[in-house]
Structures are given as C-alpha cells and as structure tokens.
Image (cartoon, rainbow, N blue to C red; front, side, top):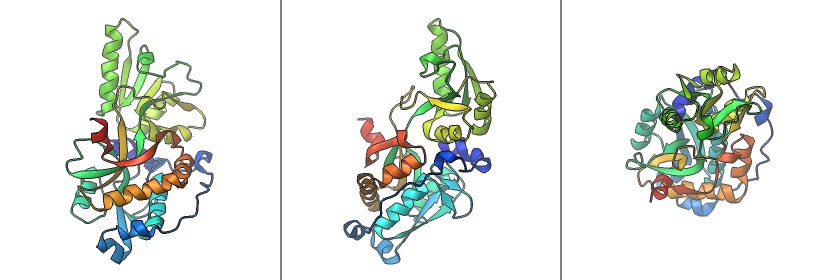
Length: 297
C-alpha cells in the first residue's frame, strides 16, 4: 500500500490547524553528541549539511507547503537529529517514491527521513532506519455504533478502502471469508482518494474506512469530533509493518542515524514529538536497521 499516494491529495486541502496538534511538544534541550558526529561520513562533517528528500505531503509526518517548507513529526525529528549530529538538515521535494529513491541512490540527497515503508523487497537496494511501526485500522463514526474493531466484526457492514492498495486486497479476502463462514456479507467500497473515503464515513454512506493508522489519526483529528479510530494497534490481516528513513544500501550514515534516533528515544524527545502529533500508538521502543527482514526470520 502506497501511504504517500493515500494522503497526497488530502494534504492539499487539509493543513494542521486543529487543536489536536496545537500543544507545544515541551522538547528537551539538545546538544551535539561529538562521538556520533565523529562517525559521520567525512564529506558531511566537512560541509556541516545534509539534505532529507521527501515525495510530497504525508501528514502528520510530513506536511509540505513549499519547495523546502516542511512541518510535521518527521520534520521535527529531522531538526532534532541535526542538533545531535551538529549538522544543518534541509528538505527537498521530488515527485513520487521512484524519484526519491533515485535521488538518494545517485548521491543527490543523503537520505529521506520519511517514514517510508520497509519491505524486504526494498531492502536489496536501500537501507531502512526504522523508527515507527504502522498498523492498518478502521476510522468509524464517533462511538463506533456498528462495533467494528476487527476484520471479523466488519462482516455485514460497508467498508470503504483505497482502490488498488494492499488494504483493499485484505478487505476483499475478508469479504469472501464472511460469505464462506455464513456471516452477513461485507460490502467493499473502493475509492480513489483519502478525502473521499473519509467523507463517505462522515456522511454515513460507509460504516468504516480501512486504512493505515498514522494518516487516519490525522484525518480523524480534523473531522470535528465525528470520527474515531477502532482496532488500533492490531495487525488486521497484515504482518509487522515498519517504516523509517531511507538511505543507500550499506550507507555508513545508517548506523549513525539509528544511534541518533535512539538518543532521541532515550532522552524523551522522540516521545514528545510523536505524542504532539498524535502518533503515540506508532512509537517503537528502539530503532533498527532493516527491521522487516529481521521480523521475517
């Protein structure tokens, strides 16, 4: 499932403005970790600069409003990483994941903070420094009147889903299972974009929207109290899903970035930022490199 694709159109019409994300993060004061800085590649130490590339808005992680104007949880984590490493990290935007990966692997950009989905099929060409875990959950009407919390409880209901993604495959398989098990039919409603899917639930044309937890957290926060999340933290037909920063394969920067994020976890900065942006349910205890491969062993 392309999470960037799911949220790109929505980012153009929805910006962080609601009270859910208005509180100050209360971030700890950070200083340069000279041991980590010494491990940076020589060219980065010499220039004192890095560029993190993105492929457009992915709220609440990355909200792009200009060529280099990026806000969101990832943008704040990037700033904190720069403070620990003693470098200035700026942002650049390209069109789509292929251009992002090409820019990184050609050396045009040092890395992408992301987070980008870590799949074993992608690890052959790139390293992933994973710092969040993703889940696929339901956005439902406030109070969850239909009681939809799992795939099994989705039987008998109208479930909105993004067309062409892995969530659609899972919910279609569940629809077949509902029928096979003699349960009420599950009606799959496929939509082309996230705003339409959310609107369908808000207008009660759908009973739930089945999609990725982090962007759903953002859109639910913008729904004026009409929606809530259900099935939070459950796998719902998926294996462990990790997301993180993307770097060239076997990059010497990968372990440095992992250790910088670990320091942010240890000193409370990571939790403060994640909670500020409503992402406390996507936090992990410790970052890692290529966790998808490790989870599959």
